[in-house]
Image (cartoon, rainbow, N blue to C red; front, side):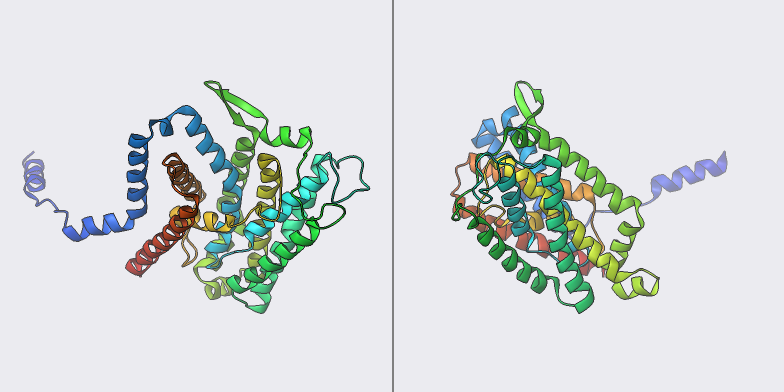
Length: 352
């Protein structure tokens, strides 16, 4: 009893650790983006109370689901200390292919009379995305080219293909529309309703894709190899990891995710043209960095990506409620990416 009493007295007498000003400053700097977003949400909610009402919340969730697949794809490239700026154009190409084959007005293929079966078109656009990813991954892995240069090249190539594709048949570069009810219903049909507000089907598809990517990242050898290569390529190679195969697979998987985004977007927007997917990669990269996927490599979580996409959509929706000029959104996106990357690099330097 005497010993227990002494221990209790020692614990009580032990000096409490004080929180220093540096620790507070570090906390504020490391979480600056989240703090800014929180302040924006509070400000918008005060200025526009409708922002927090059910229709707005469902809209934010729907937009998050629509943009999540491309972010899940590009995140793998960032984990490898790279990036992929061709993502948006692959989305556009996939949307155009989907819209041209699942339409009631065949302008690109005037000799067609009936739309192709939905699964065939879905498989086709996935193959297209995988091929672009294969070109990107092979060039990075085999030729040791920087991902930025490689994907800049494929971005221009894919954009040129989109323009040529839209000029095919009797379309003459026009927007593709008149999509079949089956295609639109499959993507934008009502999954269920909350308080009379419909939640579209593609929210479910996005959840499924997120779950699959979580399994790939966390429960497969490929996922472990991806993080190993991103952390230290030379060490991974010495450890027996097939670095070339891993890099190629990451970019192929990314390409497939971009094509799925395009397939969803074609029906969601009900049309496709040369500008479909424009700058999508900027939003995806910003969301990934906000969500903790680090450009220094080997760091990232699927849950963080989901949070990043959600926070980004909250910001943009809030700015729309405040009637902010659409042109100003480009400046805001650029600032978000710049600040998020600066915070990410600061965390890396502190750890180092």
